Length: 117
Image 1 (cartoon, helix red, strand yellow):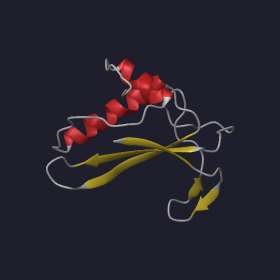
Image 2: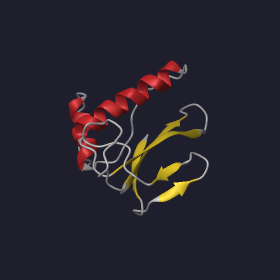
Image 3: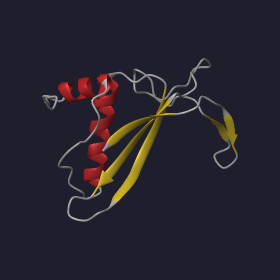
Image 4: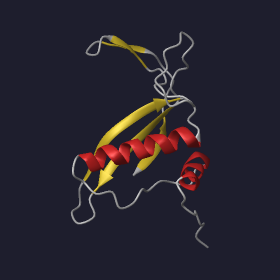
């Protein structure tokens, strides 16, 4: 499952990691931002695995971003799926809402998105 959550734009010093936190980690290119003009993150993209046979779920990652296009989202989803399957789990579905980037990502991987009537 993936979901995007709006977050408050802010920059703080993280004592444990010893660095500034609050900046977008990913952009259109899906590469970590390194430039001096990195935007503050406005969204957190959260990935979770959810059990089908047992009522369990676990957050497996989150990515701070400002704008993420459907191509970068597709690459990120495929990377997360590969990582989950490397751990011995089997991915049988990807669940998300029908925001524009999610629909675009689904289309890029060959899914057809239909609206319930």
